[in-house]
Length: 387
Image (cartoon, rainbow, N blue to C red; front, side, top):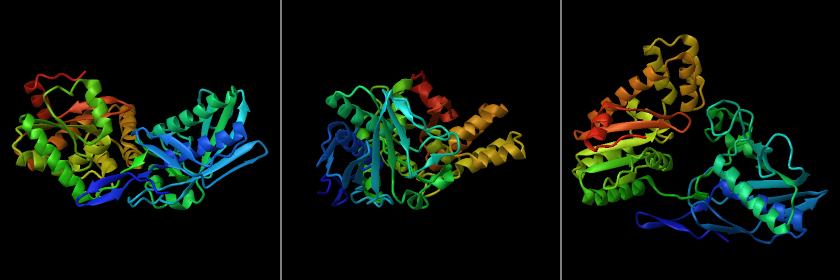
């Protein structure tokens, strides 16, 4: 039965789906249940981080020689996802002491990737070099799902969970994994557990409505691309009451234009460096399908400040912006390069709009990286300090 959750896109309702992370957690719970109770489940269910419950029948569930395997088919809903319809398989076995190799321990539950799940080969990603490309939220979902089964069964020993995706290596060729240095398969992803499809036009229209509503609160506005930005706003003390916060996703330029149309007098952008550094190159739609140039921007600004050929080549080869920052840190150039990039961001923003505008950039690894001169003026006007 199809997952019956919908989002509106213009005059259409588009069906949502669920992530590979949700599939992995469902499959792991099914395999663990069969292993610990001897009963094959006919249905699997879990509550996603978004708060929506996903219930699916397993594609298969088998128990052989003390190893249980369960498969769940990925359903991306109406989203054009390359992993739609792929099979995500979890293999669970007892480990006694909870100590195995190759995975990450979570209360005696070890999680690792098998065939079709990529391996990290470059620093700067969520997982360390050598680890399976199973991101933090899916790892937590898998561990929680298996722990619930373990507790219900009264089993005290450890469990080893291996996630695999048949055909995952071929699917990965159609993703950004090769460019990120993830080899051998796809990544197990998802921060909400849910795939929400929407057309680009509908997203921009919805953004315009939200900014119009925010204008009722005054002439000040905080823009942030997504959840990382919201978390940083809370941690840093920038979510000042009275200043509305709007998530603009990748549509920074459209959001700035909408703010101009609604008469905002000052707008502060707060976002992860992986998104907002692109503004230094004039890229106002930060989706990777539109344009990237993060590495090129770091390389160019590093070269201006004396980076040698070896460092420039390493920057061009870095998997993430955090990896770029680590290289610049080692060379003693991080402050100079981030200041240079911030100035470029400010110039691009001022070319786009005439109201007071600025940006604050942060990294999950390094925290606050800096603020543009426009952001410094806005923060002073708003009487805000970044903690």
